Image (cartoon, rainbow, N blue to C red; front, side):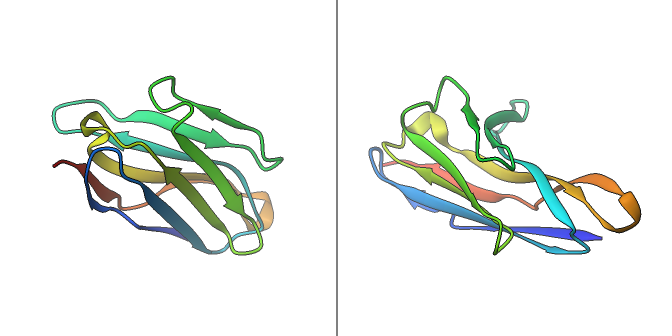
Length: 120
């Protein structure tokens, strides 16, 4: 079993910055793609950014140029640096990981979410 634990959310003013972290632990051989999703009240969960094991990143058009996804595989940790935050970035942010485990298993996992609120 694998656990993903996010941290770093909070209340920030428009134009401010936050850095989210997601630490993976458990029966991990390697972590493939890692992603950040977000879900605002009354809306569907949407992909914010994804990073491959090789370090290639893609972003939703709404965050491109403001958010940066990165990972530290030595620490099994995923990051999301969020700059120039806007009220419409307010949402619960979820970490997702595609994990290869022992005995050639492969599963995807979700974190519990961390709330980001952008408001003056």
